[in-house]
Image (cartoon, rainbow, N blue to C red; front, side, top):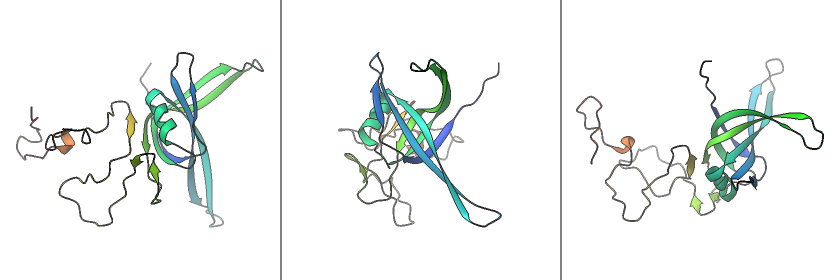
Length: 186
């Protein structure tokens, strides 16, 4: 059997508060519903029409903690994950039921555009008003947390962290020599 590709990226607003539960093995799971809207122009009438899809999403462990702490109805969020179809037997009717949902692998909290919008104690960065690009990366406000596979956040805010040490290859200056080779500073 050949290998497939299953990737989902959604951006929308929470349709309701997260439903947080625990499995019998004490694993935290959050169920959220993201409302994703779209608009198009009717070719016949010229009217602008819209439709909203409500996508069920399940998040486990640390992502469930993120949902529990920061997400509320109406908050914008970016979800990366995979589509999953599962079946179960309904205990009341005894019939087999099918569920299609997105299993979250990464969640990014987004600003809503309102000035008073914050995720608890984490201020959401605002876009800069000027078109000038800063010489050094601005760190006036921290980025909202993004958790998931391989994403460990930033160490820049840790106490006694050396400012000049690059965290990844994107922060290293291009030396211009070696045809794209990067010199690792350790």
